[in-house]
Image 1 (cartoon, rainbow, N blue to C red):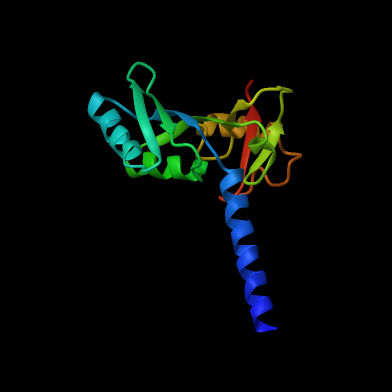
Image 2: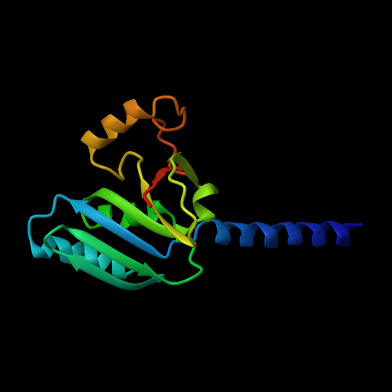
Length: 165
């Protein structure tokens, strides 16, 4: 009887592991950072993003303070990882747009607040939570999404997103 229970527990753990990996595959992240004043500032963020083991490439546009991170297939990163890296460099995220498989956007940890019907393999979603948009934008969004009870909460496990394409 104990052997059956152990096998059952192992099976549940394996299923949980694979379901987590499948629900959070980000292929690309486009980050617009705020607070940068010089190329050394962007270099600090670039180094933090390149330190991600899942990062294949990091491109920087100094004119728009945009960092485009291409990621390895099968990663399990969440938007919180990018926020952590940018803040560790001493800056903030003004916008975070993720490229994800279309079926991923409808699963945890994402909550779609604005959807655009799109039948494609990959879609772009923008994270709309506090800390992922500038404060002025968050105030507008909080009013617009006041009917979504989880939006204004400070739950770091859920990410409210809108589908861009």
